[in-house]
Image (cartoon, rainbow, N blue to C red; front, side, top):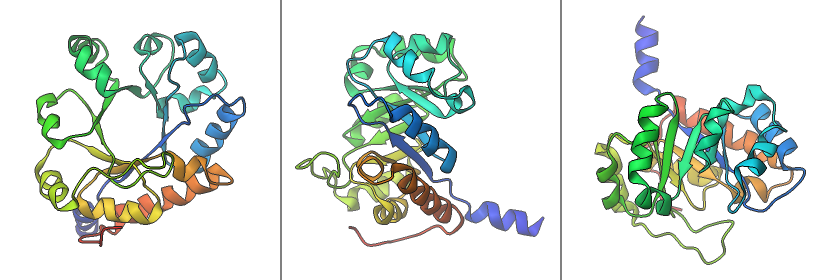
Length: 226
């Protein structure tokens, strides 16, 4: 019992989210399967401009056993046809369809909801609505050259220490910066370039998954900014 209590005291969940490339790639569903097989990640399926049918066709190429680890950007109607983890909403979708979001929360209580934020001052307005908050850009982007960090880390630490939201760091994350994100108080990292610009992507996903597991069992505090 003492050992269990000690483990729970130091256990800090560190989630890994891998966002799909926005471009269409016929080989991508197969790579996603390998990523899910070789890591503990959740995959965020983001394909701007694609229809429900196109996203459904993509999902049909992924074994149903992996669907509960996939969040889809938009397309809430797909919840009626696939056992997905949930739906992610962009900042624009969140601000223009707040009532629709609240209805979805009531209609699909088992569904996870997340949204993107770019200012910490906006987050308290949505208490109780989202399971995950993706805050960006925390570091200079890997996949978007010139897209620079918008936060002073000295402002993030106090906010993350008291908020009850599960806040995920997005923007410029890699294995080294995952440690810095954890030291600031983030409960997870979301990556795109660190995985999809690597060769092969599933190896990068496996390495990031190992880093997140290490953080969970050996929490870090006060790591330097990078």
